Image (cartoon, rainbow, N blue to C red; front, side):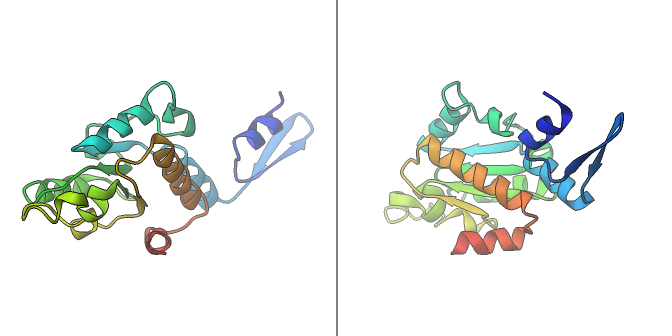
Length: 180
């Protein structure tokens, strides 16, 4: 396989021109940065309940989200690009979630996974301590519905987020798409 086919297979945002014995790559710097950023999203898990099991399942052998560029689930917010909130958030955890979000480097993205992370789930109506959704604590970019959502749904949301980053959308534009 020659260089031109390899670059096209990776959906590189540019053209490869053959100039005799050398190849030239033509692209814009913004497109290359967005392409690189979207293909190296490292998630930080904030898993508190059953959605956390589905998140682990997505990283396991059957679904293996590392094939799509979500290589390493990080335990440190300073090394993560996207935080996946999987489960119920209670008032006592909300400041910790906010602190983790603040420690992440920009650009940072947030995925709320499951009914509990989106709206407090069935627990919001039965107790005073449950936060009615992650968006009351930090801004959310992508919502995944379900109780708990399937691993395919998490993969789809991560791939959708990748596409939005590759397209050069800003975080505000991504949030506007999430609100629709």
